[in-house]
Each structure stands twice: as C-alpha cells, then as structure tokens.
Length: 203
Image (cartoon, rainbow, N blue to C red; front, side):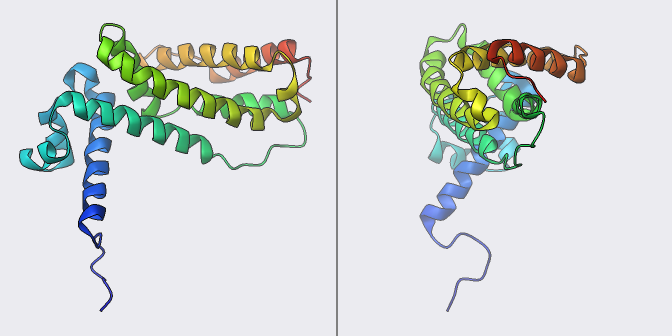
C-alpha cells in the first residue's frame, strides 16, 4: 500500500526534515536575536522540538552553528538560482545592477551579516565561514556574469563586480541598522559606475 500520510516515508527522510527545521530556526534566530542570542535553547524553542531531539542532531552550539553556516550558504546560492527573469533588450546594465542588489534583500543577508561580525572575534567561526563565503563568491560571480552578458567579458568586469558587491553590502548593512537610503539613487549611481568601469552604456 502506498504511503499517503504526507510525512516523510523513511527514518532518513524524517531526519533530514528535522535537521532542516532546526537549521531554519537557527537562521531565524540569527536574524532576530543575533549571534550571541542564538543559543541552543532559543533554537529548540523556535523549532518546537525537545531538547533531546536537538541534541540528537547537533550535540553542541558549535556543531549547530557550523551546520547553520553551511545551510545558509546553500540557501543563498539557491536564492541566486531562483532569478530566472530574462534580461531586457535595452538597459541591460541597469537591469543587471538592480537584480544584483536584490540579492541583499531579506533575512539571509541579515543572518550572514551577524556571522561576519561575530567572526571578527571568533577564530573558529571565521575558519568555518571563510571557505563557505568563497563558495558563495564563486557562485555569485558566475551568476552575475550571466546577468551582465557581453559586458562580463570586459577585462575589468571582476574588479567592477567586486566594487559593486562591496558597495551593496555596505548599503544593505546600513539599511539593516535602520539608516534610511534611497534605493533608486543608489541604483542610478551604481549603474553609472558600472558604465565607467565597463565602457558600456546602459541603453
């Protein structure tokens, strides 16, 4: 008889669902409570599970945070892959800059920001975070090259992309901290900057 309860059919599937539930609760806690406030008790309560269930999957806060870092990077890369809108026939550079900026929307960036700040004084976290950030950086570069199209073949594209990403991280961090900013003004300036780097008009 076919399995029809809607629950995962095997123990390994149920375990995978539980781990994802725990990791998503961890990311939500990082956004709401920060790195210091993301305790195993906080995660347990957010996930709605018992202490034993949490410890069965992650025996310590360190193990949980390591798994959360890896999960967060996978989610960020998946977020890039969800952008399937075809590029416009005109103003491709402006569209690419705007689409790139969209990466910094939402809780995934906020959680990443918490981890970056915490890693400054936590060598163990930094050691875990750096290789994951490199993976994300490689995926983001490949994705961005697709956004910019022919402009990505320009010899200064990598430099241009790096400057854009750094500027966008700073603007997004300021927004997280509650400092107002004009997205449209920023997008206009970033597009002009990209044109200067790449010698490509946006029209």
